[in-house]
Length: 231
Image 1 (spheres, rainbow, N blue to C red):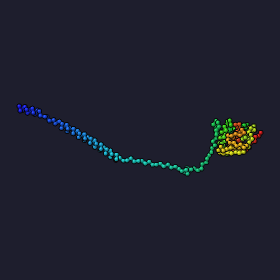
Image 2: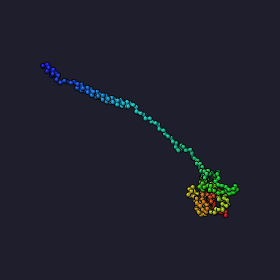
Image 3: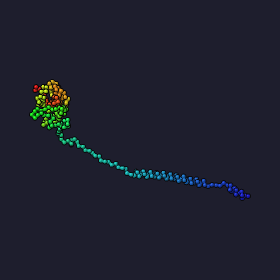
Image 4: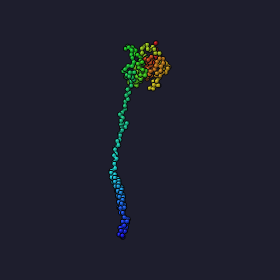
């Protein structure tokens, strides 16, 4: 009987389990390994950063290349001076209605018979503006061999045409390089370029003559030379 009770007491006694301390030890080991891994990564990063900085600091600084400056030498006006320059004036001859350039070698007036008097310039073929420009070009040429005008004078015209032009006194002749300052005075009447008197129109006032027109026929009259109708 007593042996049976001892057996029952032995079976009913609490059993001790030793698995929990083992589990705590394994967790502690895993935690220690994680910290060591993190610490290793941090140390590696620091070592890599320091190494990179040392490598960068040991590299030589780039040298700046200084390019030589080019100095432009400009000669002074005194060095370039070649002496006095002679100005050559070439007259610019006007053109007619067909674009042909007019010059003293080309006649712009029509002559009558070989033995007759010259005919005045026909303003139906040559405009008054073109005729005035032609006269300006002749005056600007300044050459002795170039005539002052190629327009026939009133005294050279045919007698029938002369009879159509009234007599006048050439009282004054004022020429200027400024067109607005030019004027003539015929029989006490002051006229400027473009104005009319007794059927005569002033085409151009030149230094030594005046170009007049009568019925679209142009001619010239020497300055201060009176005109008397032949009757």
